[in-house]
Length: 163
Image 1: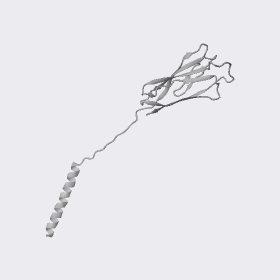
Image 2: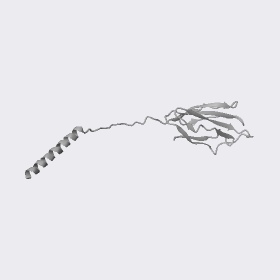
Image 3: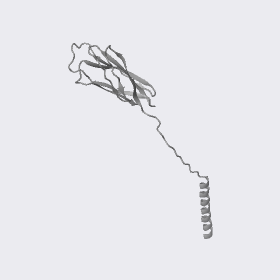
Image 4: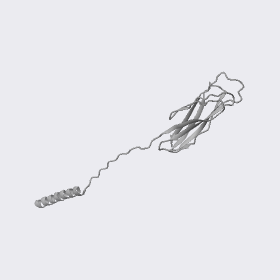
C-alpha cells in the first residue's frame, strides 16, 4: 500500500509538472508602451491697430502694440473732435476662446473733457478666427473752455478663456 501511495504521489507531481510546462508554453506576456503629447496651443493676440476715423486737424498718432498691449497717443484739437481706432484680436491657437472680461476704466484724475467709448468684440472666438472692437476717444462737444487737465488715460482688460 505504501508503494501505491508513492506511485500516486509521483504521478500527481509529474502531472503538475506537465501542467506547469504546458501553461508556460501557451502563456504569452503582452507589453504595452505608449506616449501622450499635447499638440494644441493657446494663442489669443492683438494683430492690428489702426485709426479708422478722425476729425479734421486731429492726430491719431502712430498706435503701438504687441501681442497683448496697445498704446495710443491721440491729439484732439477742439470740442467735438474724435478719433476711432479699430483693434483686431486673432485666435491663432487651436482652442476656441470665450470672452470672459471686457472692461475699460478711465483715469479718475484725467480730463473730464475727454470721453472714451468702445464696442465689444465677439463673445466666441473660434480657433483660427479674428474679431475686432472699436475704441473712440472724443473731446466733449459741450465743453466751453479749455480744461486745466488736458490728458486722460484709459486702462482696458480684454480677457479670453478656454471653455
